Image (cartoon, rainbow, N blue to C red; front, top):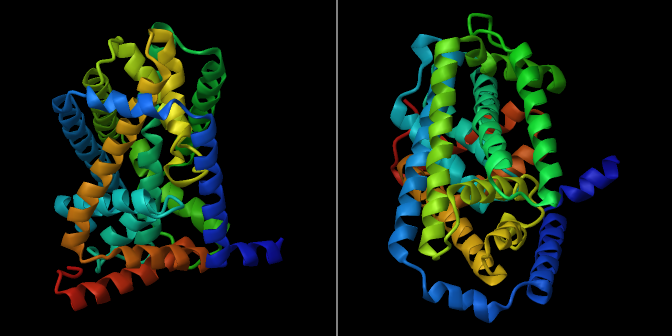
Length: 364
């Protein structure tokens, strides 16, 4: 097993496997996919004002999610170590960009490393706590997701193959939220030291960052903001639907949003392109939407989401003085690090060094 892991960590091996899976995916999509002529024709009749509205709704949705993370951090760190809002927003943008362009869901760690450099006087263990806040923030998605799934099951025409997937995701999400709530603790307890054993360290940092789960008012605020973010994303999906002339009710947009999220849980290849579009197009056939039109609509939805993440991310990268090469180096360092916070600490140091070279502001 050790030999296999050593081989897998080789960058050339990872690049080869990624290239192979991507090639196979595109071959299957092209061979078994829709009529591509009809897909391109669907774009000829798009009302682009609706697409612009969908993009703007996604932007505002992202801002609500960033504010939710800010409330989560507020409960996990002592008052004297609270980060400024602008730094939280900027770090969140870096995370969005990293998730969009670097494989492996690096964005969560990238936003922690970016925010940590703005807290130079914070005590040891702060990086671990911030990782815990990211975990808690991701858990908040379970509340709006559960509401959305329940609403979709009651109002939308859900295919039988999707019903089982929805129930499994809901059950797993409920179990994770329950475990997290039982393991949460308030920030008054001493922060964990940097560099303890990996398993024990992960448990400690998760519990420290989950402090918001024991604070009813901030918890309600964070969950509300996350729900508003999901609501705006639902409206963005519906607006894009109008842009493609798809005359389907709002519950159909909810079904599309749910299945898109399920299709991206496990990244089989970059963006799971093709799988996401199939997950969108197949259920829309129950509403009389041609498969090719639904596939084109799925392409547009994914493009809107990526444009939002990359656009906000580029602004954040420029402000922080971070390059794409730095993010890729963080990925390599994280894979070789024995501890999550070791990789974050090294990356923070490199961020400050690059910021100095580029003339950008450094940690304050």
